[in-house]
Amino acid sequence: MPSTLLDLCEFREEIRKSRFITLAAPITSAADAMRFIEQHSDLAATHNCWAWKLGDQYRSNDDGEPGGTAGRPILAAIEAQDCDQVAVLVIRWYGGIQLGTGGLARAYGGGANKCLQQAPKRLLVRRSEFSCSCAFSELALLKLRLADVDGLVMDERFTANGVDLRVAVAQTHMQTLQQQLADLSRGRISLEPC
Image (cartoon, rainbow, N blue to C red; front, side, top):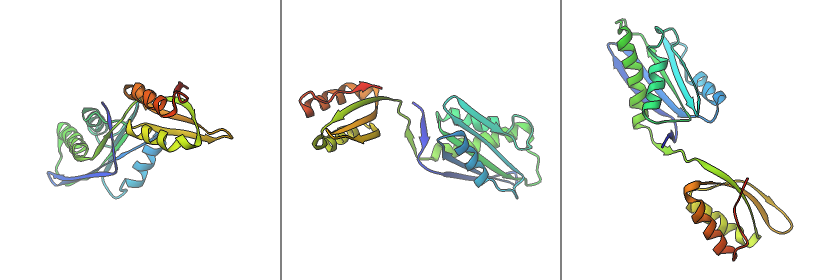
């Protein structure tokens, strides 16, 4: 199951006098990825190579390194670590010794791999959205039951009769939550697909 990072992560290494700093961070959109790359790129560095993956979308950039020696290996590291919603930036300061195309691919991909391996992660759970209504007095218990199954409140609207909710729940927990909510409300609360 894919995972994303909890926060910014960093890995540093020196390979044949070239300094590499790898930064990885969670992202929620393509614009978010590009903002992370722009904010953390070092214009004084020789190269700022990067890749990001967000569901079926992905991009990579070699930033002047020979084609396919930086961006693609970084993207391959993201996929090898089964990460999603992640951006990785590898900053290189050239040390005077050529690494060759294989050495560059190993340096960029390896740095990204090591950075992602040590990063604290959380699993990405695929959730489906449902709607339900409850009385004011049942709201706190409903939210507690929802939290027990790692569900999310997407929207809540207070009405004259109670609260209308839109929630997101993993399919694996749907039956359990449905039963708990029915027990809680004597059958009044039921989850309806959105």
